[in-house]
Amino acid sequence: MTITQLYYVLAVAENQNFTKAAEKCFVTQPTLSMQIQKLEDQLDVQIFDRSKKPIELTDVGKKIVTQARNIVNESYRIQDIVDQQKGFIGGEFKLGIIPTVMPTLLPMFLKTFIKKHPKVKLKIEELTTEEIIARIKDGHLDAAIAATPLEDDNIKERVLYFEPFVSYIPKGHRLHSNKKIEIADLDIDDMLLLEDGHCFRDGVINLCKVFKDHSDDKFQLESGSIETLIKLSNEGLGMTLLPYLHTIDINDKEKANLHHFTEPTPAREVSIIYHKSELKMQIIEALQDVISGIIRGAIAFQNVKIISPLPNK
Image (cartoon, rainbow, N blue to C red; front, top):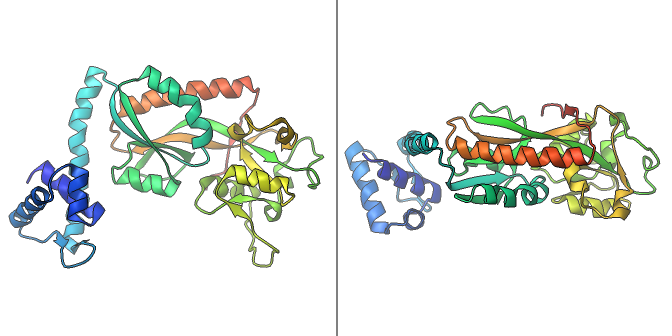
C-alpha cells in the first residue's frame, strides 16, 4: 500500500470517474486504474462499484476513503514540518472567501500580500460558508475567510476583525429621518435580505431576533448580491443592512442613506479558518498579519468604534 495509491483512490471517489481522476492526478488512466486494482487485490476488497454510472464507493470503500483522507493529509505534514523549520513561506495555497467579504476585502490585501510573500501561489475561490466547511474537511481548501463563530470541532478560527453593520435606509422609509438606529427599530418584514445560503443573511435575521413566516406578505425579496439590495432599496422596496466595508466606496448620493447604529455597534466576526490539523500554518499566519494590519488601518481611518459581535448563530 502506498500514499500514491491512496491519493488515486481519493481522486476517483471525488470525480466518480477513472478518466477524470487520472487527468486531475496528471497520470494516464491505465496507470491509475492499475494502481487502484493492485490496492484492491492486496486488501482483497472492492473499493469501487464499477457497474454503477457514475462509479460509486462500496460500503467498505467509504470507510477506506475516510481513512485514506486522514493518511494523505498527514503525509503532507512531513513537508509542512520541513517548510516551517526552514521558515519557508511559499507554495500553492488554496483560499476560500465568502461572497459578502470577497469584493471588499480581497482588493485591500491581495497586492500587499503578493508583494510581501512572492513565493506563495494563492488560488482563491468565492464560496458559501457551507461549501467552505466541506472543502476544508476534505482537503480541497487550505484555509478560508468567513463569518464566525462556526462551532465546528474540526475547524479552527482566528479572528481577523469585527465588521460593523450599517443600515441603508432610502428616503421615504419610516426610519430615514433617524440620525441613529436602534436594534429594536428593525423589522424583518421590511428588510431586504441576501438569498438563503449567505451567512450575512443569517446574521441579519439574528439581529432582528425573529424570522416570521412570509407566506401572507405581498412579496418576499431576496438577492444574491449586496449591490442589488442597494438598488432595490433605492426603488423604495425596503431597507437593508450592509457590512461596513461595503459602505466605503458607495457614491455620495447613496451615502446619505447610510445610518449608523447606536453603541454598542452590532458587528459580525470575520475570521481566517482552517482544519484542526494545522497544515501550512506559516502561510495562514502571514495572511492573518497582512489582513489584520490593513483592516485595522482602514477602520481606524474611518473613525468607527466596533464593540460587540453578532449573537451566535
